[in-house]
Image (cartoon, rainbow, N blue to C red; front, side, top):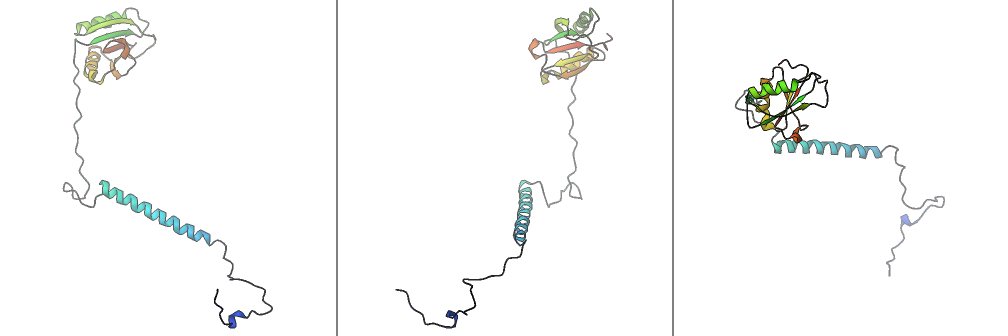
Length: 182
């Protein structure tokens, strides 16, 4: 059974008062944005602190100066680029495609390559007859030096790495253009 407390002055409600319960002043409009602003600021501070912390852990930021330079920035060292020496490899097969309208030009290029020490496979006309540049194509990066050697045998020729002629069975494919002056 509930305890009965003695009546006091708070139990007396004035007759003209019709209110019941706790009453507060209405909240001012726009006060909710203050909480959103503080939350956004906290997120930004935490993200910046996290990025900074991860940068320190990964080593991309260092507070220690480099012994190589007085300014603390490392001195770049030059890395030598390997020079590819053109070679003639008679074990590689070279196909010759004539990309011009000049009849017999593929045969002349084949003779030039054979005299230079190359093993020539097929000699044929290219799909297009209006090519302007002579290019030695190779499909495997290990044959770059050989492609340079074949291009050296053909004045004005350049080299290019491509898989377009990989199915032909040849290690190198020479496509003769109208710039060939052999």
